[in-house]
Each structure stands twice: as structure tokens, then as C-alpha cells.
Length: 274
Image 1 (tube, helix red, strand yellow):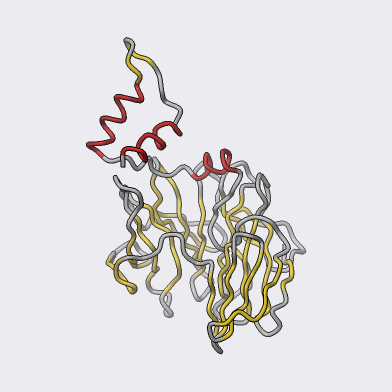
Image 2: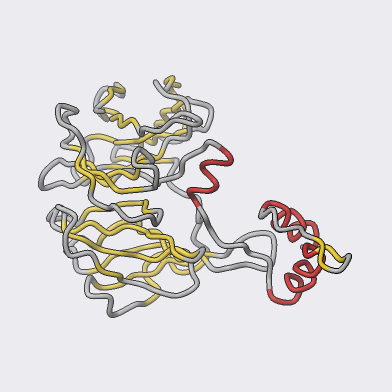
């Protein structure tokens, strides 16, 4: 844990000398007793690493629109694409907070997303046109939505917790659309925080999206094809509710625009939507 604390504190660039003593040393002592998780600042991490993590796109089944987080505004904001690439995306959020991981309700009416504040991430909800924004969860945690119940009554999400060790722990939770009924949901404990790079579909097939720009297609557990993805960068895939296509976003290192692609499950063909 000592090594992790040193790395985290150095990354903040706060080392100064006060009466001949480095502030980093004082903060290290505090970190050992209070925990060393520095929280999240996804925009700062994007500027430093040139890798953008806005989560997987949200596909709205009622309209076919695709919601995605993009750095094109100079912040992390949520945009809506009509799915055809013929029109400019509609910007749905516009404050300086980093907003990401959008998911659509089954009826396409609501969008739930993560919003960072003071180093933590909580769930927010808005109508599909970006109006009536309100908070669903609160507290010093890291909440990221994963989907809705089939009837759209609750949002299921992964909650991770600040850590004084080498990694954060995470659990599945769910909450109603009015912010009430917060409970541990399906999946129990031990959720994987960085999940979603493998998509399973009916018929024993699975699609594994690698960080090397390739997608492996497996049938009954055996790899049968490897497809080169058309864009560098980490892909973030999601399966639409009709289970006919996988939609994924990708942005090259240092890029300022997210590109959106789809995989046709019948043909395994990859095509660009935006």
C-alpha cells in the first residue's frame, strides 16, 4: 500500500516545501491513516493519458437513437445521435462536470448517466431531449449504470467504493427512477468494475473486444474468427435490446471526437454509423 500511496500522491503534483519539509511527506502520513484513493477526474486523466473513457453507448430501442459520451465540447458530455450519421449530434449536457456511461430506458423516454463531482461519480437521470435533469444517487462512491429492469422501473448499476488498498471493491445495486429504493441488486457482491468488453448473444456466440484493435468471435467457447476493428483506441460495446447488433464507440489516443460503429450479429460485419 505504501508504494501505491506514493504513486497516487506524486500524480497530483502537490509536492511543495513548507519550512523545509515536503508536503508530499505530510500527505503520505495522512494517506496511510485515512486511505489513499484519490478519487476520479476522468477529464484530467484523458488529458494526461490521451485515452477517453466515456463508457459504452446507450441504444434507445424506441427511437434507434444512440447516446454517447464525447470530449468534443471540451468536457465530457452526453450527445444523442440519430443512428444514421446524417445529422449533427444533439448535445444533451452542457456543464463542466464529466458525464459518461449513458443508458436508455426500454421505452426510450429516460437516459441515466454518471456525473462526476468532487472526485466521485453518482447517477443522474434526464429525459431523452436533455430536460428535467436530476440526481438519483449521492455520496462518496463511484456509480456507473449498466441497464434497466425489463419494465423500466429500476436502474441497475455498479457501485465501487474508495479504497485504501490496491483496488476498489464493487457491488451491483439498483434504484428506482425517483431515487428511492436503493438496494443491492441482481449480481450480489464482487462485481467487476471494468467490465463489458465481452458480449454474449443467443446461439452460443460471443464477441470479445480487445484493447489491441481486434474483435474475436467465439462460438460455443471456441474462437472462429478475428476481425480487425476500424479504429484504434479502447472500444466500449453494448448489445441493443433487440439483440440484432452490437454498437460500440471508439476514440483514438488524443482524439476529440468519438466514432460509433455497429456489428451485425447475423453477418459479423462491422460498419460505421458516425
